[in-house]
Image 1 (cartoon, rainbow, N blue to C red):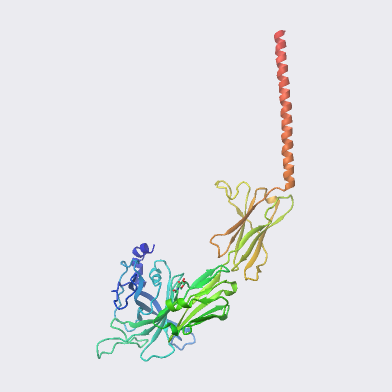
Image 2: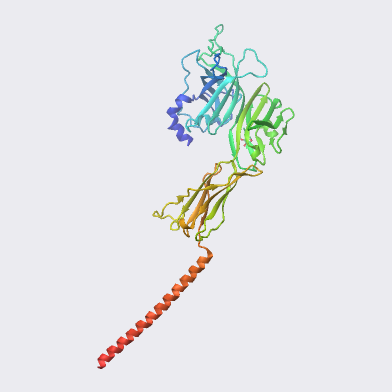
Length: 470
Ligand SMILES: *[C@@H]1O[C@H](CO)[C@@H](O)[C@H](O)[C@H]1NC(C)=O
């Protein structure tokens, strides 16, 4: 699918947002053999606090369009890139904000999702702001960039520092007007990525009770001994720590029972993913993976939601028609989370059971009056609800099927429960009696008729005989 998309649909559309220059593989970088190095160009904004203007109405943040050129990003070799156009730096403009970033020392795993975002009609959010590390380094400016592919894909936060501009000797490089930083010959601010924290799943939904893995990793050239990881969770205004890992001791201390990170995997693969066994409603929230490495700190945010599907059943399980008695038929929707459920009750007449495929049968009709109990919340945080209808024998007959159909975010299609009205035992007895009686009467009548007919024939024959004789 990617291949087709990259070749046809996106070849033109990509030019504006994404330009790929098939850059020469850098022999010094030495990427894994299966990766290919490409440049990725993204539309970004430079976000600054205060906006610089002293106006009462100035927003707290100002945004200015900027371009981010990620140089030498490793993407899998099988990606078809031949159809992409090359990125051409625009004419030299000291007002333009073009950040050209070397990412080889702090790579972005999963960066190919940035390439496909446009094909899949996903927005890429890209924000750059100035960054102030724990210690100042003279002659150096720092930026932090957060990249996010809407609706899945990679989310990354990258710390970058300016690189010295190597121009002609004795010639002062021109400076970017706004930031007062030296520009390269092509008019770009040259940066090198130093540290990168990323996740492949910025939002996670889970059923209750299972183990949830929250993905978080980092790249950079820091020693793992100087790495600290803190996992926090925030929910409805409350924040608390879930786990704290210290690289110098190579151990994690958990504040939530069972929470852990694999310290061997952290040391070997810079994988700071969190395991949360026995996930409960109370664990739901916004998780933050904060990685500190030497001078740098960056974080990723992962939304974790519980989606527990309901069970649906009808009470009573069987219902008989009784003349003049209105019955209550209740749909019990049990132990779901979150709160939002939708319930529809339908009724289909006896001539058209729901399975009937005949086109002439009328569609099931929606019941207009549904009565709801209030939500009940269980100690595990899940909810239950009853939605009932009143069944009146004057508006339906035996064979009518009632269906309760429940929609919930955890379900890809509604759950249903059905019941078909039956005749009461008593009237069924009468029916059997009636039918037997009618059969008996019929047989009796038929017998009499046959007898009479026989007599008549005999009489006629007799008469004929008589006539003949006479
Ligand atoms: C970390 O390890 C887990 C478990 O094997 C894996 O699913 C996840 O993709 C890894 N994440 C990173 C960022 O390497």
